[in-house]
Image (cartoon, rainbow, N blue to C red; front, side, top):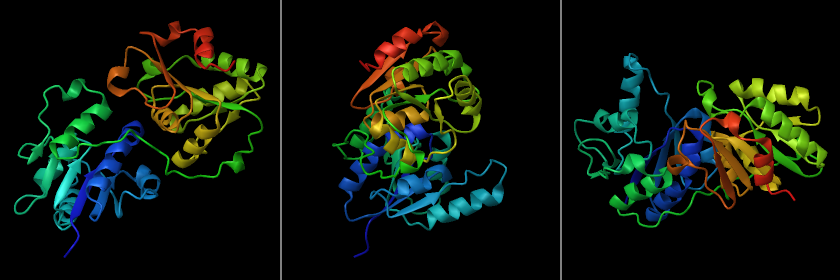
Length: 308
């Protein structure tokens, strides 16, 4: 008898991927003998491929709406994957379109929000639910009742190459380049970094790409800070979080990794995002929120780290 074929869709972003790790585990537990394929973005291929939840990881190139051949190739791949069931954990307009892209003919039993899906998540309050609660509610419709909390316990990485001596705190001063209102001022991060150094603690700066201006500014005014911008994999961030005395960061993807890894974390929120819908989850997470993050004092953030 051929194994049941399952498709799981989760394209991003990083924080959403981390918060989907509980559903990933639940789907594997519910289908222990199935052949499970994950459709995700290239950035997460190696990271999620290292888990034992998936037998295959496919990269979605996300063709533009005008890329006819890209859509044709994607349709061909989805149709001839011959999936028995699909769990759309992205639940976006794009991923819902994939259900319709498989027509005509046999399509998998679909869990998601696509019109016509057999296991459609119809909770009218879904957009007001935290991501974790929303996904658990969606999977309950599909008969999966036990969804564990997000976990990165399976992630392994060696951080010896960073040669961090003594205690350290992770600082994540970046975030979406087009959402500056979600960022605590760089000057405040710099002040906090200097205070950490005065305590004998190394500030370790985490970020990538557009974060380089913020991390570079902090490093230029705090020579003792270790700037790891664009030099850490998701697995290495997880491992660094396990050894850190704490972490402070904006509402951005790496903070989800750090909090889920169990690091005592202080996440900073402005009016631009609602922690009730997307807050980091972990063993020790403190949420500090101000409509304008410039009004959040360094004293309050330092106290929230509970380093004494």
